[in-house]
Length: 207
Picture (cartoon, rainbow, N blue to C red):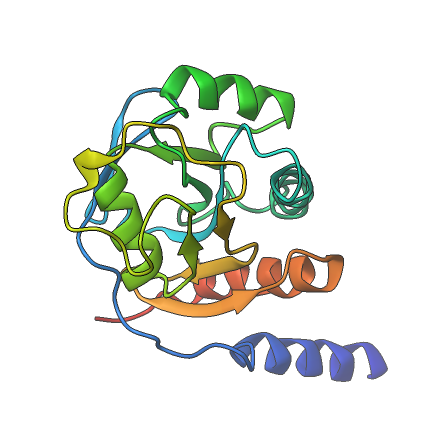
């Protein structure tokens, strides 16, 4: 009897969405490429629950701990992330001029990224900036670029300076391409994000 009661309680808890989930709106259209050189767009990610973060491979300070946290999150979701609807982790490079697919492949190997779970995106700077700032609503500041971005991203001829300021949070995106929540990279944030990824996988967002 006690076991049945606990099972019913657990089932009821699983039916409730994580308290932090909201609908913060859709991402803008985008087209980037992954570490294998394959095109990845807002449309190709439709139907996938994914968590994004923002880094660049030459960053010596904040990005290595963020990459390590992503590897830890990957380990948390690996046991169940492949047994149902698609779930992915996506790291968007904020230095696409330096972070070519080959560079991102080497970076991913360094942190044990499994291609089936963890992708790295790069491409046009203006597309990336619009996605990060206007889509994910996260900060992206660099010393040689005006606040809010320049109209012509082609004027950038140097790789991103090492003092670039960017978000260190994870952003949860549902199957429709809508932003649903933000999470810190600490262990508590990882556990909450893993639970939310699994909940959305099992309870697909409706159009």
